Image 1 (cartoon, rainbow, N blue to C red):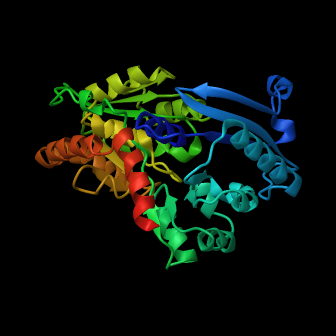
Image 2: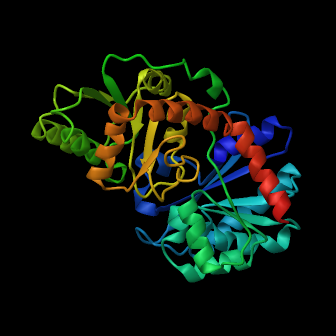
Amino acid sequence: MGHYLCREWLKAGHDVRVVHEDMRYHKRWSALERELPDTRQFTLEGVPVSFIKINRPLPGYRYLPNREARKAVRYILSQTKEQGFEPDVIFAFFCYDQWKVMDLLRPHFDCPIIPIFHNCDVKFSQKKVGKILDESPCAGGVSRRILGKMAQARPEAKTFMCYGGAPNDVGAYYQGEKHNGVFTIVYAGMLIPLKKVDITLRALATLKDTRDFRFEIYGDGEEEENLRSLTAELGLEDRVSFMGRVKRDAVIAAMGRADCFAMASSPETFGLTYLEAMACGCYTIGSRGEGIDGVLVDGENGVLVTPGSVEEMAAALDRHFTDREAVTAMQRRAVETANGLTEEKVAQMLLDDVRDSL
């Protein structure tokens, strides 16, 4: 998300710099990465990036050692001085880990520092979340659930939603009404436990004797063999296809053909794949209370289900057969929603939200 925002700000004429602090337990650097210098600079799609390795003392260690924070600050200050760069605003993505660095940087820059909270920032210490909010003029959250946790820590804090964006050419994705001979559902993403692809499979199994459908699964990951075994166990082998990991264009093309995109993942931040599916005119089924909730509005431009609920997922899928008129209307409104949340538009929205909050 951060890269796409920076790319759009650069296109709009803003001067943008990215510092990527890669924080890992030192033994988890690969042999190749260990050979690379601790700091380096490169350009990614026109965005200048400065990279620095930050070592954690133990796996899963949440607190950044002072020496590593000071190392990051020295590097950031040297880069900005070398480039003659004076920021008007600093955004701190994944702010829980970053905040010690931000505290040390604060005396050196006369500009607001805006934290952007992700799931990993709000699931530990509410006290630390409150501290970050106390020290910030405003703050963003990448899902409504995260905004809720921020409000629990500091109800009076100025906060805003930090949206992910659909590609700027999203208007070209929708090819009109779907005319499949069989109800076609797509999933695209990593095959890992939190994506809960098994819930969709179990839901489809409850419909297999009364409904005709096809389920295409795009992606790979640690759960693939388990999902293949479950597919066989549920008697769905002739209806489910594992397509493997394919290029993004192929996924978009599949969404363009499909009737439905279903994913009840949790925890989930924004879930950009949902927005891409909506842009393609898919009947989109997402997770209630997760990142897409509020953009995907239940019954308006898609359906929300409780993550882990086979019954709710089955009912949402069956709605294609029982309430086609409503589903078709949701598909059309989904396209309208995606067109209003392109990368260019959400990048400007973020700047506007900060400006209005200061």
